[in-house]
Image (cartoon, rainbow, N blue to C red; front, top):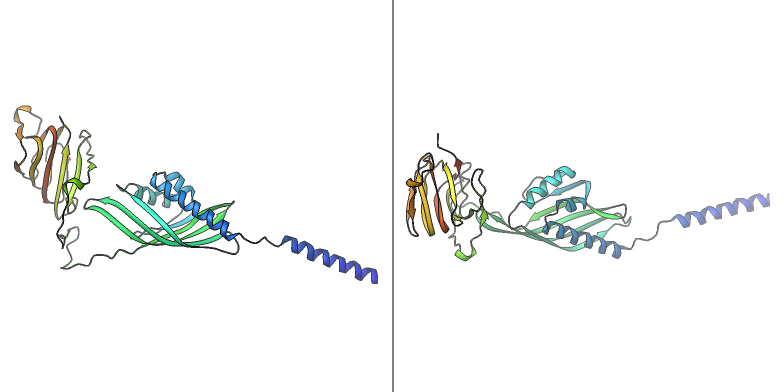
Length: 299
């Protein structure tokens, strides 16, 4: 009996010893936090370099992403599409600063909160946004991945000072707008059938909407544009260089007329025309949208 009891006691002690050895090691939270900060820094570098594959590689397959003022998306395909749209923004700059990272006792989950700042180019000029964010990290196969990411803008939405505009109608700005000539933001104007090289800068309004707009076009030397037409009338002023314009349904060099800086033209809508530039030439257009360029002759 004594030997049996003693044997059982030794077995129990051995089991406790094994159980004690199997107890998980303490999580080094400081080390894990540094790993998460390193992953976040890599994430920012990938956005700056527009490397969407590396951005997606930092997200879990079932990750959920919620950008400010946009619907949430879940899963690799949807997250990739959301980032593809984000990276198309001209002049995009996005950075964030963690203010707190908490690693769970299990060592495989963490929550990060902080602030972000973002800027990008829009038809109305540079847009600056700031706000806060919350990111949930999940550790898989020794690597920290984004499980969810949600940003909340802190920039207030402008309040309407008059009756709401009709659908598709842009309201005029309530405050005076000023655009420094040296700070005009140019983007490439890409129109099917037109040679590359033209640049566009939107100074006021949204040319694609139905409200008032003002924009500038810059043509390189010896540029020639094909026959095309616009759905609504344009008010055109030559600012620099030499602008060439001919009215008609086919290119006819003898119909081209030359316009110098300071010259003004009004082009009625649905009137086909063609032309070009001598020397680097800038013209300014203003009118009521939508502004559109249609290749060929007006029907």
